[in-house]
Image (cartoon, rainbow, N blue to C red; front, side):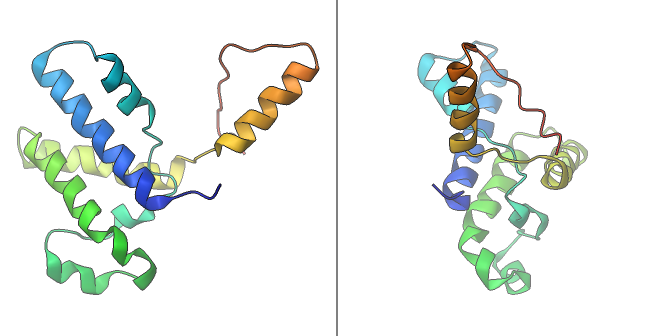
Length: 135
């Protein structure tokens, strides 16, 4: 299964929105909210967030291959802006996301499953596995 940028961007937006809600309400996540949070994959495969998305006119600067992601990228900006105390905090949040584009990488489920299967065939049954994205 290929990396679906649109689905992953949607998952990330929903996870960020959920996290802001949990912080505002100062409570733990429900099982449904934990599921939403677990779908967050970072922005390693979503370079579209490096593009400006303040208004429709910004879309002319976007590559054709990324244009379908413009509305969701604009939504991501809105969610973060609406949940930031001020412009400085918004900029800090978004700069963090942008820097992760170059440092965060997505490991497809098939790769993780293959590693788990190989370990299992060796008699090792991991409950959790850390993926350090170390190359």
